[in-house]
Length: 373
Image 1 (tube, rainbow, N blue to C red):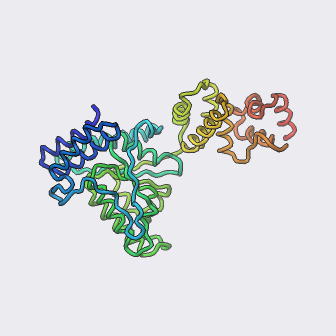
Image 2 (image 1 turned 30 degrees about the vertical axis):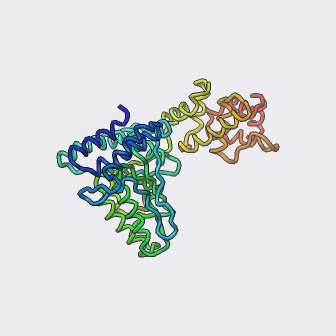
């Protein structure tokens, strides 16, 4: 059922006489209906909120501003975060079996959080993502928000961190308080920028106070969903780890994930299985972001120039991203890469495949390899 999440929370809030929940999820429902073009429904719900003074509704915790804007940095007026509404189709991720199990467990935990709350069992809906750049941390945060049908509030590190004494802690507090005021997934990317170890001798005392403030604010988040990501998990303060119930390391995709990713990217084009398998094997060691970038670059070139995409063309683009020293056209040294690829993987880079890559005969490839020996 569409909008089930919002409707169920509205009903729950009504049964508990909690106007803050009712108004917050009604506002979220209005935003989704507006995106879907349901003008009459949007007007009806908006009128009902306005008729009961929803913009200043009282709850046990005080005044709730339903349409509260994202807070801004005090001095430069930069927004502290960006708010988006990801879709599952745009945020599909291809994970290892272990990581997929962890993500499923995290989502199941959140789906059952009301049941846990009713039983008096404390919840800690927090997830720490870490791994090399391009392994899919941001995309996974988008996917989680999409699966939960919640907006994603992505913190802007450049706005959070201020040169003014004490302002960074205030910015963090403002953003986390905002996340508590409405249903959302709060995403703190580049997390090490505000959560570095306090024993780092290169850091000034101000940043150490920021970490203390961050820890205190995370402790007060309650059931707000928090996802943090870092490329440098070793830099994080040890106390940070204890604040995150789930932790997930994202690595470069293995063969199964690479094949799933390439199949999804090429679903509208006719690639034979042999060509697909060669591209999958050749892309070993690439991150998901690198594979996606290379594939889209090649497809854009093919479409713009009215070329039919081929696996050889895609393979060239993947190899150029992996090995900048390669050249398939230009000066006389362009054949230098033939023996290097052969040395990298003798079984994969056969004389037949090398001849297709450089558009020369297999016999010429054989001669070049003998000469280079």
